[in-house]
Amino acid sequence: MTNADILAEAIQEAPHSYQVIRARSSLKLTDDQFHALIRENPDRFVSIQFAKKDSAGKPIKPGRPGVKLNVG
Image: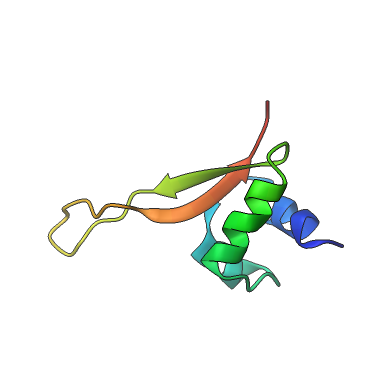
């Protein structure tokens, strides 16, 4: 199974941040490696950003990087 296949399986039900994917799958890629994998497979994946807030509830930019399936 390729890294792209493992990633597709990890986000099959819903988009996830790289942090969640690392925790829930065998993929332990760096952020840069995730970016490269997504860039190499634009027909399968789309980069997204998850909202991130500080302890006071104010948004932190940029958010957490993540990925979702490209459904068309």
